[in-house]
Amino acid sequence: MPKQYLFLLIAVVFETVGTTNLQASQQFTRLWPTVFAAIGFGGALYFMGLTLKYMPVGIVYALWSGLGIVIITAIGFVVYKQALDIWALVGMAMIIAGIAVIHLLSGSATH
Image 1 (cartoon, rainbow, N blue to C red):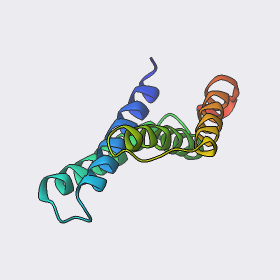
Image 2 (image 1 turned 45 degrees about the vertical axis):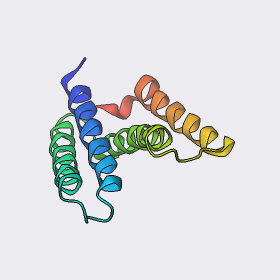
Image 3 (image 1 turned 90 degrees about the vertical axis):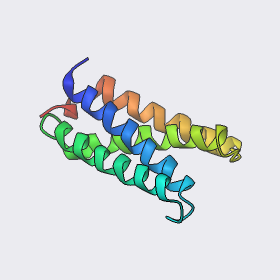
């Protein structure tokens, strides 16, 4: 795996940790989830910054946010029992398809 994709994947993991803990922090009223949210978002920005050495910002942000949306939606469904209707699932499929198009077909994914 090229290092830019490894950095991007690590950034997405940190972002999902941050967002999951943001929900758990109950609007920053619980200490440890708030701390882990800050660490998650800080780590996400750091590794996204490393990714930007190798890939353009628009592509990095599209992949980072798209993967984050899909993973956080899955976490919300499993952990927080948040409902998904058919249109949410269609939207998720479109996001995944968009990520696949960028990764597999676009020549813009590198500097």
